[in-house]
Amino acid sequence: MEFERLTEYLPRVEATLAADYASARKASAPPFRGYLDRSREFTLRGGKRFRALLVLAGYHLASRKDPAAAVPAAAALEHFQSWMLVHDDIIDHSETRRGGPTLHRWFAEEHRRLAGQGESDAYGVGMGITLGDLEESFTVEALLGVRAPAPRRLAALAEYVRMTRLTAFGQLLDVRNGAVEVGDVTEADVLLVHRLKSAVYTVSAPLRIGAILGGARPALLDDLEAFGLAAGVAFQLRDDVLGTGFDAVASGKSANDLAEGKRTLLVVRAWARGGEAERAAIRAVLGRANATAPELDHARDAIRTSGSLAYSERRIATLTAEALRVVRRSRSLTSAGRTLLGEVADRLVRRRS
Image (cartoon, rainbow, N blue to C red; front, side, top):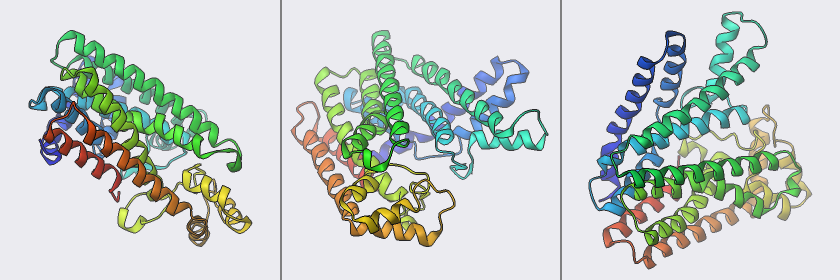
């Protein structure tokens, strides 16, 4: 099955997500329905649904069958993604997400509009955290709803637990990295965050959850893990390049990483290898929400001249080659399966948005 064929299942994923919220709304008391509506609106705003597609891919790779049976699990990963995005937006003080206000900002503005008691921003954060947490119940419920033998569903839940724990570990390290001097953050620190926070829940775990539900043997699960971690870190390094503003016009992606103070490999490497002029340019914008466009351009020039941008591109290429080497050498994949994972790698690292 080609990757493009998997996208034909996305309307079913969207319908499943909508049905999940409708079912919860019907079963809930009236005071909670407006909050569920807000969660529904946030989740259904859009997104590439890449994690959902990888669940479907994993199921097909393991079973060699139509992946329709895995649609509830694909929806589960999108509920999980909403949970992560809501909390990430709070941590990063983000204002917008997918063309609309972040969830915590929406509630803060509603609090101001209604002249509520207490501090509006604190109210928004509290509501956002809680509604983010609520998405876990949807995630688990959706995984339990897959029509697969009970041992497979139990194993998929165990993989979900592992994914959640590792993602949280990665987030802890990411927050910690943002609280220390840039010079104290190493390349190894950055790549460990990317491995735990991004590669696991973006690539390897979705593939493995789908494959587990499809009856995968351990050798295939090992190959998907190795592929997913290499391709997933490459994906995040590409995301950092776009998020720092390189090729921002073509990508259409928000380029706020410098202003948000993120310790990306671009920044850490430029700080370590650049001179004082490069460090001064980066220092002038890092973590400054009001940094001007010329200041940000100057910082990006510093990243280029330090060689950091070229280094990140080389790391992306090396990791992509590593992922494809896993695919090429796998004895668990069919020829069609190798082609499918090759397409996955291409879409992960050669994207422009």
